[in-house]
Amino acid sequence: MERPVLCELLNIEFPVIMAPMFLVSNDKMIIEAVKSGITGAIPALNYRTTDELRAAIQGIKKEVDGPFGINLIVNQSNFRYKEQLKVCCEEKVSFIITSLGSPEETIREAHKVGTKVFCDVTDLKFAKKVEALGADALIAVNKEAGGHAGNIPMNELVPMLNENCSIPVLSAGGIGTGQELKAIIEKGAAGASMGSIFIATEEAPVSQEYKQACVDYGEKDIVMSTKLSGTPCTVIKTPYVEKVGTRQNWLERFLNKNKNLKKWMKAFTFIKGMKSLQKAAFSATYKTVWCAGPSIEHVKSIRKVSEIVTQLKQEYNG
Image 1 (cartoon, helix red, strand yellow):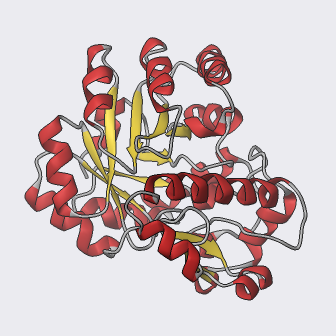
Image 2 (cartoon, rainbow, N blue to C red):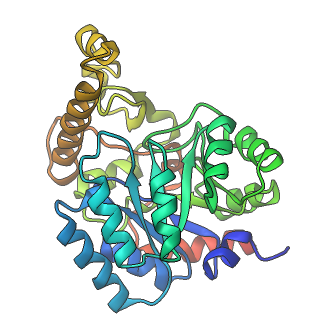
């Protein structure tokens, strides 16, 4: 089998990006990922200020010299987008992953400093748009993804993008083992973005309860909720989630459809949702709303990042 395209693109040993996970991804996880021969990305929103973001990038660079990236939300709900982009370009991160908006400005500015841009896409229409803008790769966010998932199953989305686009396609969602990774690469993927299997790690900053939930719950316990950010998001169906439901109430839905209020409602819902996630992620509370994808089916214990990567490599080569 030829060396996967992602390995060539970023000069890494193994074709995996540890996916950027809101509140979960941190400096320690990225350092261990790079040391293990993969790469990873952190959401810029995991840092309260751009100074903290800059310090984190510089800190990771002191520990490892391999590639890593930053994930930017590029729509109007992220009021700090422009300053976050400026920091990423000034610090010359290896790559930026864009989500939830047009990546045009990000691609233009990042390419000036040699930073690659990978764009989250959920369908062919948007994939063609970002390819035309100069994206370096597509991250095919499929129906099995954790967090903000797409609508098209992995085994349909990757071949569809591959056949119709000429830039590399990375698969995001539903991959939890080395065998599954190998199978999607054989279907034409350049590599994969994998997140949920890394939540239950010693390096992750979230609570033991959140990590243990990823061990105790499985694929059948993942449900889609619009209550958090207004955009469909996958969460673990804890008793609390069952109680409050997964759909926005009539008032939230009405405000989201109102032309004049839509932008502010989206931002308010996003901020409110992120705060509730933050509370659940770092403290034990009955109001547990934990983001995760179906690949937690493969999480059997809380381990080190390096142990998970070693297992993925063994399964892939086995």
